[in-house]
Length: 306
Image (cartoon, rainbow, N blue to C red; front, side):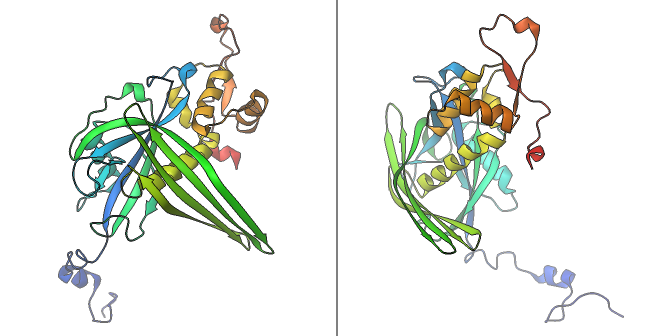
């Protein structure tokens, strides 16, 4: 008795795979790319790891050397090759286009709407990392004609909210500005949040873009909003801080990401008492420090917050 499962054509899985054409959907299915949002924190003039110099959030961009959007700025990234893991593709593309390697990339979101790319239907898997930019040697390569850091500024320019019996509809328009001494790029993104019967649905729409290729201003906006959330419940910033730091130094790093000033009282309450992410360092050899010194809690676990 044949116990193997057969499909409607009477084929076993082995028989089905033997006759399967891997190119069956090659010309009808979407292509897949990986795009990388690399953030760093800098001072007023140069990228650095000095916590006292933290003033700005910056984004690494590459200048496209070929069509489409030739001459405009985009996120590092490119197409995933056949039989290549998408995570590996992200690492490969980042190295090929910027020279950056050995960076942990966190998978962030997938973008799949038609019309994102004038060449074909492209699905993009986006990745994010917050890194010490002073330790990276940025070198443009592959189809990138240039690669530079841009100061990122994201602000709300319009907001309206309608509340009804079973929820609300909120629409926010964000203006993204990317700038350095040579360029000023911008984009406007609308974020729509619909809450109904306890379920929240969020959608993102690209309204306009100037100097930024594809829908990358939308992807960067999403990444900045996620980064602003994640710094409160993950130790992302620890990689940019020295082992020992003052609360004032750490607050400057948070203010650079959030693009807003924080009161010391509220910051202390949230980062120490609520999350317990940092702890006071009691090493007596550090008594020469002018302020109380802290370090990231080595026993901290985000699951303890649940």
